[in-house]
Length: 161
Image (cartoon, rainbow, N blue to C red; front, side, top):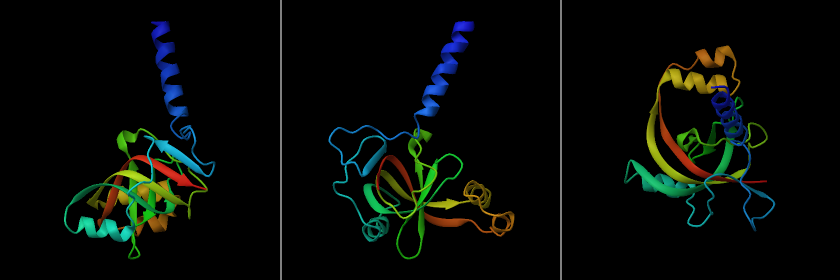
């Protein structure tokens, strides 16, 4: 039993510690960090391209390029990207399988591969996100309406320095 506990504890520590470490990608430029599944930036869509594709379908599998607005300050378990037209797009990571750095990412270009979709985020979740982002109690309580927006579930992310 003691060995089983030791093995389980080691597995948890190793898997948690590696979630925010970038992938080592042979031949990749030094200014690019890769997280999650290793992807390329081929065929990337702009915010305008993505909006046009989502006007025709509720879900689009794609590679998207944009600018990071904010990352989760608690774990790096989500980020927001500029989706054009003065809107942000919330990005989560497939199966909660990887995270991005918690600090210093705002304003950086990123490319993601995954699934973009139209979503409705309820007030409780919006307040949770605001809390994770370090917003004040007043800002959190000012959230009273659900948000209809574009969301993205990324299987892999490239972040450019």
